[in-house]
Image (cartoon, rainbow, N blue to C red):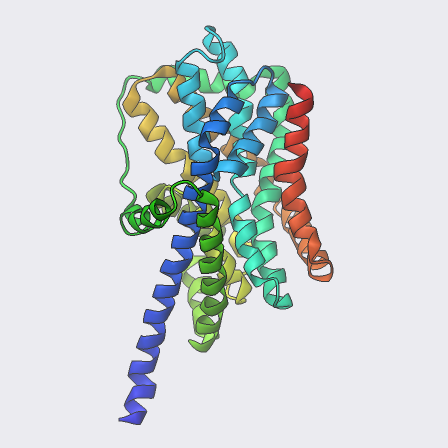
Length: 370
């Protein structure tokens, strides 16, 4: 009986524990997002209304999305404000101001997986791998903005292409996808937040406690489940080729409607040594496309030309970024590797990066520009 337990029941028990920990992990990310939205949604909407030029729009996109932790929410706010005439009555001018906000949202949404990587900070080897896996997504988004934004600013390339595409698609109809994870995560997250309706920051504290517990034991359980077999499964089947990893990231994000969850899920896998940066990078790029698909289909369902234009702009920006940096993947991967290496030696570096890049610098810039 003891032999049967070790051979059959113990592995099954570990798998059940692992699935429970993954649920706890996903719940913590959902709770972080919902808490930030409770605190920052109204402020984010008010801030977006103040955008008067593309540069300010880019910075506002970074800052507001960092606050609400949802590029989809930022994009939805932008679409609603355009429809309400907040950016003027000229549709072309409105799109020109709004598109940089969407570009900035791409950068701001990567805060979540950076915070997830901090859960490994006490274990240096895990932390280096986890941080590299999370920061590579952010570096890709930043590099894409650095290269593409000047062309958008001076020539409005994304705006022209998006408006032309919107004209072809605006009246064909669309659909809204159902998020299966919301069914099991949102009720619990909302219940926790409803216990403290006036203090959403308490939800963030609870979320981080759950996150740290989940991350600590996910890696332990995975290592005890014969790590080399798990590694072989992911590398030989799930992430075998660049195209397969990219499509997986795209489809998974389109289904669960959250690039934050999609990209955060691979962080503990990287920490455990299951996935390398080279395998994760195309998956992250696929997540960037996937997060635009649900918004795109929903915008088609509205029949609103402005909504379709913004949805197309988000899609085209990500496709351009992939076309540029997938062949040049060694640049963001090398940057992430170096950053993670230095962060192990100087643990304050990633926290300083998050504070400066996502909050302090954008806040100071917005304050000076207004």
